[in-house]
Image (spheres, rainbow, N blue to C red):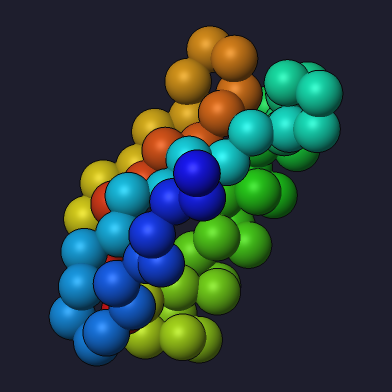
Length: 68
């Protein structure tokens, strides 16, 4: 059974998990991680998205809570 459509209205808090294809890492090293974090900040700024919390865990999966 497919899941229900996501509520997507202004001000809704979202929990996002990003994983690599086939559970591979989304970053490889510190330079790659720094570039990823920089891009995430740029996109948040450009789209006026407020990121309340985020973590890049040991498996290099991104978890974030944001509102846009």
